[in-house]
Length: 430
Ligand code: SPQ
Image 1 (cartoon, rainbow, N blue to C red):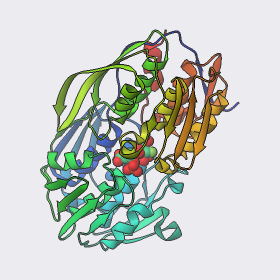
Image 2: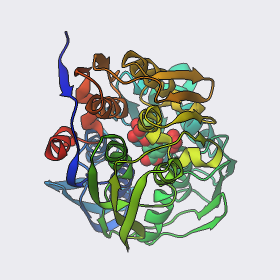
Image 3: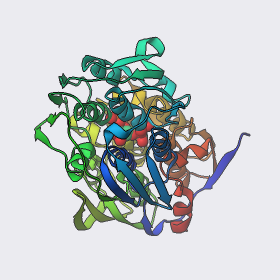
Image 4: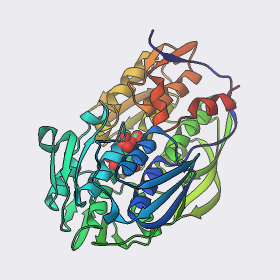
């Protein structure tokens, strides 16, 4: 057997966890700090591999970034001080780094080349290279800019109005980051609302934008000012323990300081709609991002339909929601989620394949999956994350309610977003 992690069933999960900083916000804090003038301090930064790739890329662009554990200091000298990198920019496994940085590189006054790992090489980049070319960017890449490696010859861009075919925060953010360094105004119109951390952070760094429903507009040639950012706990990491608390018998878990931005809280809506015992309290706002403490207890659950505008609000939580649905009474249907096919893995295929190995009754559809809950008990076996952090964590929680031992191959992928995941699980397991 390859290197694997053994996880056995638990009798209950009890205790308090402070999940690590939000991945989306950590990436953006480095990027905004790097293009602003003055010092930026980022506290509770996520030290996951993806966000470390973002730091590495901006260091290669000449930005001074000092790391003291999870506090990051960025000495910003403004967008125009970014330098032509003499090395290739390697985004590792991070789609967010790749797509957002392409917006900035397109408006730069230099040449750059971007690569990533095997998974990144399969992820669609045309969704950003196409609108950036419309703004005037000179971009080349494998299959004419559809995939990495991608090269960019930066230059002067003009603002555009772009109706995005997908509800994607990465597409929206890439165009807005190019837009604030273009001439004229730039507008992105989404089919459904995706996470709005870029919009909130632009304001925190002194930038201007206007939001009208699904339409976001920024003025060109903006100068940003460094600031202090406190990163909230990542609700996408908390989701694994929210589900664990609901499905493991005799459990009660308190999750502290979790980001509850409404563009990310689809998982809470799903838990409530399925009948979970969950309470949200101590609500407050830091750096224009709302946070709260959340308690979840063992619950009796019912299957539901999950579709439409809810999907972008929980897209990264669908693997763990699929596990949740195996423990609910009746059928859960997930629709309108074809975007799952272009994540770190094809998450429709990997979720169905791995949960089926454990005995779940689950079927893939074109744009989601159907889960027949409570049809059989899950059993431990050899499963595989396929190099996808969210699949790895979902399988570890599945192992907690499965008979016997589960062996998770490629579990190391979890360090992309939650390096302390197994320590936190051990801390509350009984
Ligand atoms: O960064 P990456 O690899 O794309 O990470 C994922 C994840 O599961 O952590 C997606 F696979 O999150 C994306 C998310 O799905 C992070 C993100 C962001 O920070 O803007 C937005 C979402 O992607 P998209 O394509 O819908 O914009």
